[in-house]
Image 1 (cartoon, rainbow, N blue to C red):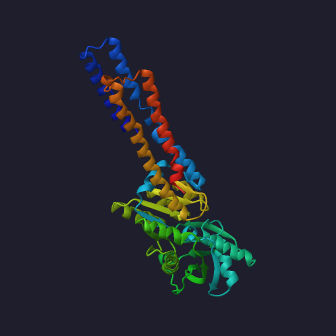
Image 2 (image 1 turned 180 degrees about the vertical axis):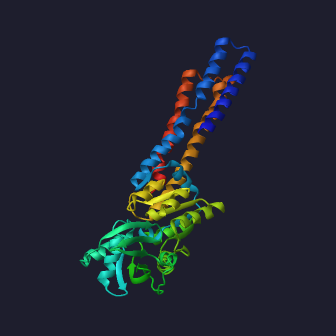
Image 3 (image 1 turned 90 degrees about the horizontal axis):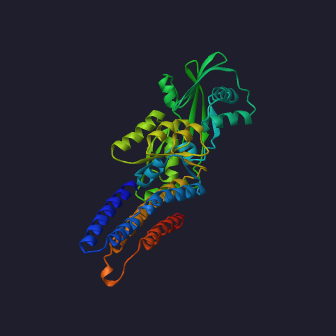
Amino acid sequence: ADRAAGYLFYAALATALVTGVGWALAGASLGEVLQRVVTVLVVACPHALGLAVPLVVSISTGLAAQRGIVVRDRRAFEAARQVDVVLFDKTGTLTTGHLAVVAVHGGDEAAILGLAAAAEHEAEHPIAAAIRRAAADRHVATPAVRDLQTVPGYGVQAVVEGVPTLVGNAAFMQQHQIDRDEITTDHTVVYVAQAGRVCGVIELGDAPRPGAAAAVAALQHRGITVAMVTGDGVRPADAIARLVGITEVHAEVTPAKKAAIVMAYQQRGKRVCFVGDGVNDAPALAQAESGVAIGTGTDVAAASAGIMLVGDDPQAVVRLITLAQATYRKMVQNLCWGAGYNVLMLPLAAGMLAPVGVVISPAIGAVVMSLSTIIVAANAQLLRRAVV
């Protein structure tokens, strides 16, 4: 808008100069020359350009809010129109996040759940919530815990009743050089280890969100690459990916690795939208051009993203991109209307049709100039029809 107003300024100044010199050379009086010059400057007033973008911004922000999209950073919203790649987290984003413990292996079920629930009692991740919920449903007592430490992307470690305890994924066990049996399952697997050995394994199941497959299909139909980036194991990640139609899966990745994957796409010239809900997603949300946080996720994820979805429907990502593209088109249209209309009226204001008796006074010029503002305002309102 600033550039368009700048070009219009120079065009108006040049037209006014040519008008003044032309009428003076034609023998017009000083009053007539001033009248033509003033009319040119009045008609060229970039009044409409001042409304062209802000009015569309205001309307698009309201439309976004009505569709459950909270725009916290306009740059992230504008970047969404050029997205080439959409990366989804799995648990709580593509899936319901309502994990449930489906099996406990390794011995005393109550003891294993009690250890895991005790270590996970402060964690926000859906896996931790599911373990605590299972322990509560089974009326399992949780032992005392101290020295609790969360390792994002891996699990938690603590001292439970004086014994060092680890609760986390296979990579976490490998990191601490703890041997484990491979579990063949499509479920998410959490290992519980004490004193350097695995004492139990917890399996948790989840289901895709109802709109996940439709969202993935809609994005792919637009030519956008869709991939899953998750800290969960390969088998459960692949199982959900198959259900929602995703073929590119990055599993068992740490929060730093998620951000690195986003950066790798960016280094290939891609514009990335990352969609996530957890603490583990915060680095990737901050790294992506458009970070989109699921509203039902953690506060850390919401604070790291430029855009937040009030609900948890993945199809809102499609609506976000559609609205961003429509908003930009409407801004460009308004700039063309605002500047183009004024430029077309300049010759008339300068008196080009004076030989046939058509001369515009400064007052009429002011009315004509105002029409461009009305056109811009009306065109901005049409944005409401462009987005469903």
